[in-house]
Length: 266
Image (cartoon, rainbow, N blue to C red):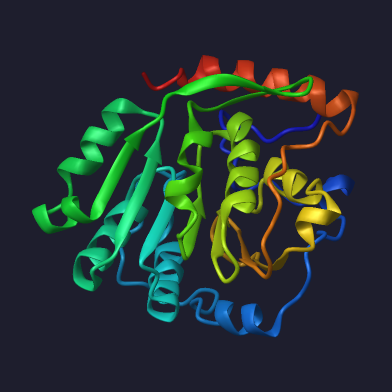
């Protein structure tokens, strides 16, 4: 059962050498999206942002790309799954542009830490939502994902920009489907960790009816790999597919591994 290992430091550096991870993704191409992602920094371009000590945090090239997207899109609402450096970036931009951020984070102490790093005008622009992780079933597959995420559907629908950077591997697929199912045409979804086998796998599994509503473009030269999607037409609400016995067994293994490593964030 091949899988990346955070413990061995291979989480973001795994080679894309698994056949199932190399299949063509089911999304369409779009000249508008291709032009949009050209705002990303050139590979190896220097950044004024310091490199974080934590290798799992967003790297300077990703933050530079998100800053360029903000300038291109001017979203009035940003929704992110996973708080941290991106929250600070989004909060600063929103405070200066009369916009707002909804930030969903599972770790209660990290919510408090991130809020404490924001200036008062930035805190007013951010709605921090603590959503601890809970086991959730989609058919026979299990996911350790944000509690009560479905209740946010009406709140996130107007968003112009989504960032999917959480939770851990075992819970990210329901978050992807939530974002895909509840965004509006024109909205952009940035998916971090595209170099991960599990992230490529969940993108490959998006059903054709849902995938046909989105254009997609990869930024593989990014530190962690990014995949950027743009909603082209109204999607239908869709749940993660069943797939087969192997994904069912892997879903339980991932939940157990992430629970033992990270807990629920209560």
